Image (cartoon, rainbow, N blue to C red; front, side):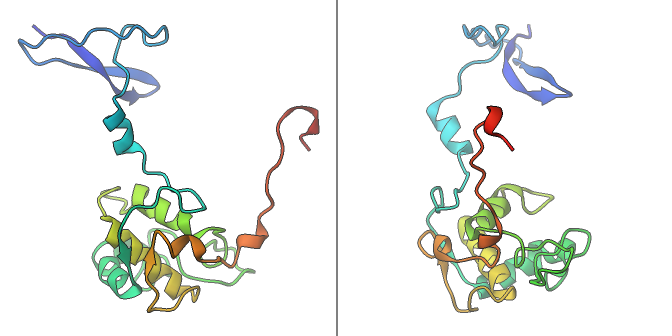
Length: 186
């Protein structure tokens, strides 16, 4: 007998549930009115496992550290195939370059916070295995990219304390969006 265990994901805008293995009891339906009797509330540990976002002030950065030398080793193994040997771009966007008049948006001329670099690499890279890098590998890649853009020295150690203190060249190019909706939106 096959029963429905719970919501697995969304495919083409539809919630998809996975069948239970033979002999297993289906999970009880959720009593939330929008659940359509499928799934269950996420547990605290499930939420914590997915709570990996990093804020501009560094909130959410994990333990660990890395240097540009550490990042160079990881870059060679996991990044250069798409972003080029020196971060100049390839099948993926460039990450090195600071010419503000260039139409190429890179870490060196566009990103306002260094912590965003950690957040993005940690969640989305490498393209073929997102989320597979360790915290020290991500800190090393961040250090390598920042050093290649002449934002930090090659000896600088990036960690949860030092990374939020990095002042990016484009930080002052952004205007805080203070709109709240309604008639005051311009």
